[in-house]
Amino acid sequence: MIKEKKIGIPHVLVFILAIALADLWFSPVFKKIVFSYSQFIDKRVLGNLKEQDCVEFLLSLDKKIAIEKTGKTNSWVSENWMFNLWDKPTHLGKGLPVGRMKCGATAIIIEKEGDDYKICSPYDESIGWINKKQVSFTFYQNPKTEVPCN
Image (cartoon, rainbow, N blue to C red):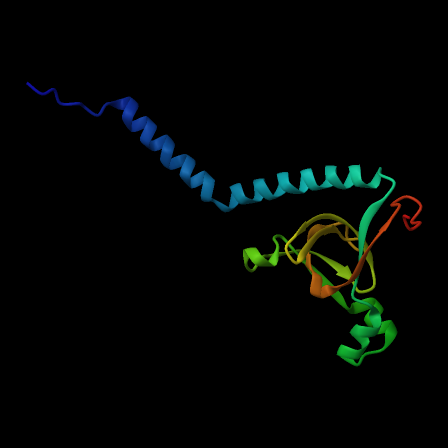
């Protein structure tokens, strides 16, 4: 004789809990929580980098290039020409803008991934990704004294 298994209250509760967790996992609120935690970790990494003697920086595209592209004056480019920082690197698809950075500005590189750099913008202190197309070059310097490293 074969015994039939009955579905009881514990099985239903586990099923409801699984659905609730799946909803939480894919919800926008959960993504915001993960993003906030990621920003918290990035700020800690940035704090550690600022305490080191030699850190890699980048210089965003020069104002001269922006003037050539736009045909605007130097003062207009200095005040208005900015790059978006994105919530994810370009190889992961279209992201959301999380901050801005002026042309000709320097920023500490927090992380590198493919053709992208995760940085902290000196303009608005936001942390996000910028593509190497918007970068003139990278260099090493002391974050406190701003003296180039040997």
